[in-house]
Length: 324
Image (tube, rainbow, N blue to C red; front, side):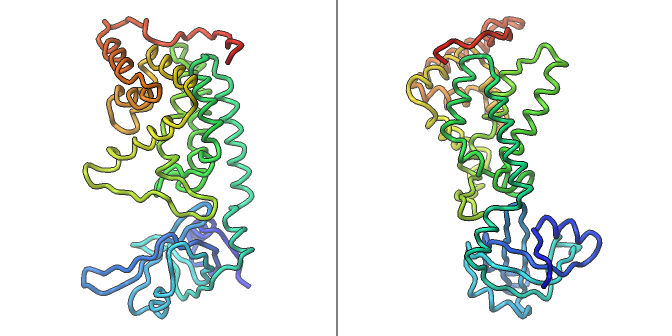
């Protein structure tokens, strides 16, 4: 029997030449398409816990009619000769397929043990790093966010097709950024490490809804729609949704206080979406039903003369109050 490999292992191995192997995957999408010459073909998106590949089944392929029996979400085994196509990247020829058994499907959804161990270590690092935040307002907001959305965070991809495009990819990306921040902050005394850590934790929080992958499969629950100006105009609503559900009235009041005192956190949250920082402040402060007040506060702070740091969080490390 041929060796069972992950898509990532196959992708690495074919750089040395074609490889006969078998993979267990989920059919993320099964789409009927047409070439420029209007010839029909089927496009399959195959996904496992760590990678994805696109398989195009042309109309003259022996398995073309098999696509009629395939559906989005099916779990299958693909056996064939994998190779690196000059135009399409990872591809497979002379392949056959069969449905996975219940046990095989369960092992596929769990993912490789090495990946699970790495992501568990990354999550522990994120929790420990945010627990070390000394500013009580940023600490309260971060702790509440992790407590309520931690499980969803661990099942979210960092992206759809680029970096960390797998379940748990967002926590890998976030942990990587936090490690960099904790390493470079001591070399730059002017940096506020608490603000860096909080900004890193929240900068992609909208992806908890946009790139969430349920434990039952590798299909994204939200469909991309780049109409009306592109993804960046739509995705920030996920961040609003994430934070709007974080904490009760007490936590929301703390959040409003943090935003009123600090204009850098909204800027850190808004930067990935190419939006003005006051928009992020409105989303966050709206949770405390104090949107107008915080927006006005940020507007006043933006008009302060250069060098006036009175609106910034103190960089002095203070002890956390007992009620936090």
